[in-house]
Image (cartoon, rainbow, N blue to C red; front, side, top):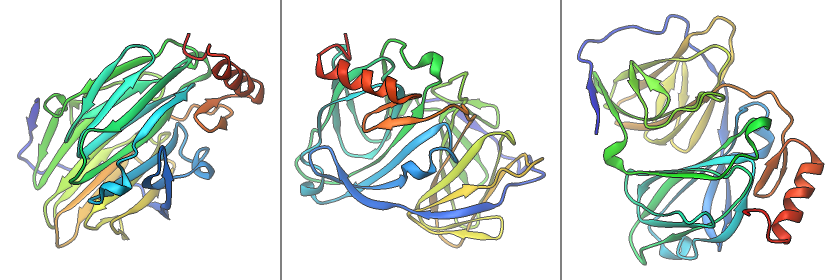
Amino acid sequence: MTIANTDAETTTVQRPRAVERLVIGQATHDGAGVKLTRVLTQDLQQRLDPFLMLDAFGTDNPGDYIGGFPDHPHRGFETVTYMIAGRMRHRDSAGHEGLLTNGGVQWMTAGRGVIHSEMPEQEDGRMEGFQLWLNLGASDKMQPAWYRDIPTAEIPELRRPGATVRVIAGESHGQPGAVRRERTAPLYLDIHLEPHARFEQTLPATHNAFVYVYRGALNVGDRRVDSQRMAVLANTAGSDGVVLQALDAPVKALLIAGAPLREPIAQYGPFVMNTREQLMQAVHDYQSGRLAA
């Protein structure tokens, strides 16, 4: 694991973003009955372009997750699964297989098509994590499928006063993350703050960004963001980043940002393309066994 230590408290953000709105996720289920909270829903896709979906799951009840996610297709985007606790086995039609465990990330580019499964390898205990859907540009949607397992030891960590930051994608305070993408330039940080700690992160003014708090509570500017809430950050002209301020208890939060594609989004279930005709082709390819050919 790469660990970058920065002991001095420095100010990097001069014009921080404010919270545009707070979002409460919708309880739902997916796969074979897995219970989860859909935080980033379809009606927010244009506002938070290039991100299509964020699901949060966390339970100690095996009945909520034991069915897992049997074989299902994807085309046209990337999935990023971040496991906080538990064990999940991935298998796909391209021959990839991997075990996602505590603190690890599974990054999959569906591209032109892949059929995969994500099944729990535990019958008791806690399972908790997140799945983010990241859109692909029109010119990249039909690229070959790609897959990478990133064990927890390979995710760089940044140390700041009162803060530990896991840099899954992008860059924070000079620390490169585990993954980079040129077109959408995603930033994906898991930020752990001690009580009253402050963390600043620069962001391009043109990037769409949000914060999801999954433990404790923090302030973004003068707005309190409680646990299980997503704060959509305003795209204020001239802004240069965001400032997170923990309250009187430890806090854990995801900070996610990316460059918008500004392209049409056409979605039908697990297929995300640019036009209805492309969606119809994806369904036809799947039904005829050619999706992942």
